[in-house]
Image (tube, rainbow, N blue to C red; front, side):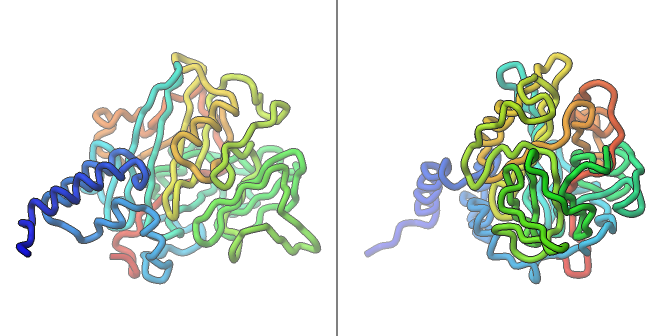
Length: 344
């Protein structure tokens, strides 16, 4: 039997992929890349482009690894920034602004090659420091491609909370009134509602589902999405749960695939309640999502983008601040690993 010409076969494959796209693509922007790759006859890396889960096959040993400490990441390459974000061999960041129901959402879609590229930075020189700084200042210090606020863990340091930063324990006290997010050595998220599933006995910590050492942990919340299920937020939770406020959240979409979100408020944007933020994170496809500090703390920064005006950033910030920015103790950021000894 005569074989179909290559281009016809590729066209058929392209059409089949388009029909399957809603089921396999985590970000709509990936569709164009996939179609061009097929039509141009490229197949190298195509599966990982279309199906983020395939990236899980890249092991930590094979991927570019950064030290699990407070060492800044490598400086981003100015040539790797584009009108939508940043991309090199180790990281892909796509920025998006979306408006829904009177709320402006600032979104960063992030894919990384190594879990060590998901990092935290602190304002002081050690985790016990009470020093604070702005998100932008910290993002610049740590060479962040993109960064957002953490949970401001030095605020009221005597509180009962469960905090780790880059493998270092700050405090390990569970709080039955607050939810906890743990990030493990694989970069996987684990949310714990009212601390259920975490046991601390004689300084030994056990957390259900957490593999290996705890790399980062946050006590703020509430948890918004857990194990792929949308959560119903406690209406009596702290942090004005039913009020429309600027808020920040981070979620995991798939293996080494994440989304950072700022919901703007206290201006033209209406702000969101906890439940509205949970609904939004779930709509983005999160399998785990967690609310972080909000109000004047809610910030997202891309400090090294060379064309701030064209990119839509505000002097390094991607979102409009909800009033005067509140200096804080920590950031969550993503770093490039390109150019490292174990990188590509």
